[in-house]
Length: 215
Length: 240
Image (cartoon, rainbow over all chains, first blue to last red; front, side):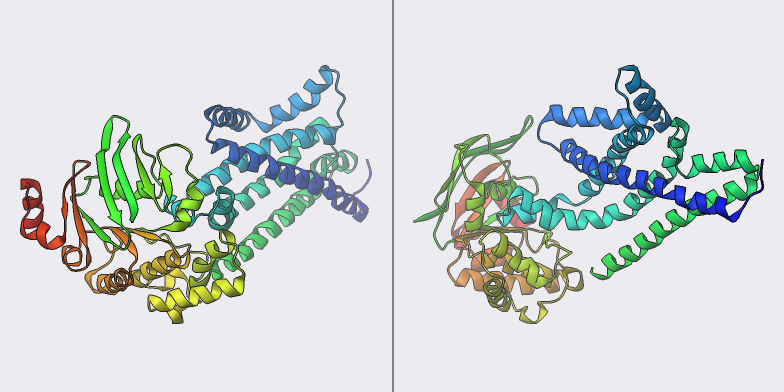
């Protein structure tokens, strides 16, 4: 045991970059996966729709913690050694893909069929219909729930501490074991999470207003 | 020369037959008003002409393309056949100018400057030259519908389809849209209109087609059709 110092708080802030990195990987990977899933869910081919639907159901219907365990312990049982970051990133990308895919599928489905028809009647190809007519409108609908989910991702990264990934929460408990100042340590940890999430929602609100002004 | 020719066209939704062997010929430059009750199949027929609806049997020859043999290039066809909808279907995230130029640039690969010249011309034609920078949401229903007509005209179609284009408008705004349609008919455009405006059908159309139960019951020049209906169904429809 030793006393809490300013240096400990600094250590926390440095550890937060791992939280940010994991969140960034999860969101970027999840965004790509989500786009693919949303596309598959609207595919003309029933088997693809079914497969994507099954994927979404599985990942939305099981706890992220279990998905993390399966990726970390399950893979090593199969003889595939993965680092804590690797396992956490993989599990969280799979998880975010399911949620973001559903958010985006819903946003696209919310655009009236008349918009597709207006575009198709002018001779636009299917990709052109999507890129120039549907996507810009769906984007506005998708923005608030997407940012909402980004905030979830940031907080979800705390679960990775359980498989031994030294991000913000893990560093918090380590420092608490040394200094035993739970109130100060976990208070500071919470504050850092709040700062990250609050910045996200503030930026999103600005963007929303901007998009709204553009009409 | 025939611009549109439908031959024994049949369409079903599941077990329900919507079009039950429809045959129709529209000569170049003719203005055909299609009348009938809701559910008579008139809008469906119109939407078949530019391939928005698929048909189960029969064939449609339109602007040199044949629908029904499964090999139609619908994108090519739709550049020659414009359609205007009851709900305008303008793109709310673009201003009037971009609504009109989008397909010119993307589909016809026309440069922006040239596309904007075309847009200015067609918007002038519908009396909206001063609304280039307005958003659809800033316009009245009648103005929005005129933009939709201009958007279609910009593509220089050979045939124009109008699907109840004044049905969502109040009487005051209906007039301004009908005037644009009348001008267009006067310019020699081949037009197929599904409409509830009987006076308009009577005055502007070269031919009126009465549909009932997925079939054409009567057709002919408006003077003849309205003055001397042959079937009880049309008599009943007109007298309402």
